[in-house]
Image 1 (cartoon, rainbow, N blue to C red):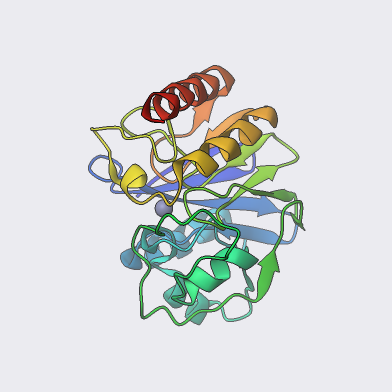
Image 2 (image 1 turned 135 degrees about the horizontal axis):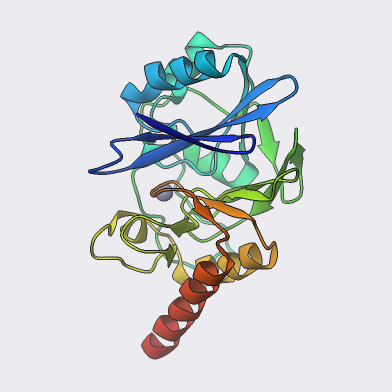
Length: 238
Ligand SMILES: [Zn+2]
């Protein structure tokens, strides 16, 4: 596990060289907010990282319900039963194993692994604009229907789950990077993902923190390049 830090945000990266899977600990006055829960074996590392920071994990927030973002969720919830679990109302259905789509959603299939045996359910359902401590929830539908990003309103750090990837080259969710194709393969709807990426860019984050890849400082140029590339790709396909 590799730990890096920007302001109040600590990135925990598992298997950083082969198949990097990240989760985050965000410092608040009352303790730590864990964003995502990586892989099943990551539990020890997450608890150890919190111990080193010296604050308890007081809440668990999920960007989306894919297995490499909720792997240690059951274990951590068992170790910290008082920490409420937050996820978007839309992806709480996916967390519960329901892959059905709403009538007003594009009819592309939801992709990516969702573990069938996950026991933990949401305690708090999130909607666009909700505040969780210093974090503002931003709906970023596309990778999954209910994906969410979280903007640290103190530092401008933006934690986006898989709405963007950085490993293998920056990309909007759904745009394939041959060196790390997995987030694209797991994306529900590329057009919706692109619209969400444009919204994230408009937040003008100071730091981009993703599920797969190192944190990127001053990310605006790279993000807008990725958005333009995704636009060009989608237009040439239609
Ligand atoms: Zn994902």
